[in-house]
Length: 401
Ligand SMILES: Cc1ncc(COP(=O)(O)O)c(C=O)c1O
Image (cartoon, rainbow, N blue to C red):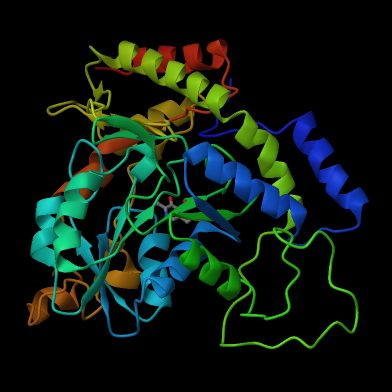
């Protein structure tokens, strides 16, 4: 039996939705995108949602509208997919990396307070692999300093956290903006795709403008039911901007999945509970501990190597692979990647140790590095059959402890 790390769960509803759009004669951004935005906003309890081409550009656009300019610093985490840091660089700013907390893989608020420089203009935190970061504590650091908080929620659709005593979905923005991904590794996929939520309608307006070249004469299906007549005016472009649009084909495929989100979450939470049970007394791998103030969407299932175990991360992953079970190591660290390791500014400390810099060893992030090197992500996807999970569990039991 071969168990992939993730398997697409697209079916007749998505085929029917894509066919509907193809037959309609309108495949670019249009009424399906508008409907997807409305439904997404309702699903996460956000006043506004703006669809874009992917989460990387969602982050880039969010940083821009938050006022980040070339030469600014953005406090963010290294322990993330590289897109988080890349979005900061895309707006000409410097990512200043902050270490994470071991239980949630999220930004450490105390480390954030230490990392703020005179040039810091925004905080970009990440709800990593479906675990909400400690947003209230991060906001408590950022707000008094006047720093906007942008949430990288690429992996966090459906995740929830306790906020002022209430369970709230990620995406009901407490920071300024939250950004989601619809890459196939996520719970809902449109092939590629992204969504930005905010409670500020003027920011949403600005995002809508910038995602399509700051065009004055745009058919906005939210307001105008059909495209403008020929000759009804000339287009003008108020500032240099972008094509970050989502297409109607993509949005149509996302909508039926969004309608199934509660069922998807229930299924993934049941799979995670079964893993947790099976790993409670495992000699090599420990289940994650879910703090009582959060509910993960289990976008991934992270297990941690127990101290003193006789097999390494690579040996365990190879053992699983040899028996048909795909896995992944922990989330990477941007500060250790060639793209960032030797950047003269990656540590945010000026001056730093030039000799250490030269070999990419200036900046140490002990918790991030430990999480990368001691975590193994197990297969968990909606549509995973009991027999498939049984095979993973049997393989885990067979590990020579
Ligand atoms: C934490 C995080 N941020 C951003 C991204 C980028 O998302 P996208 O592939 O939609 O650009 C990803 C993608 O995996 C991610 O995991």
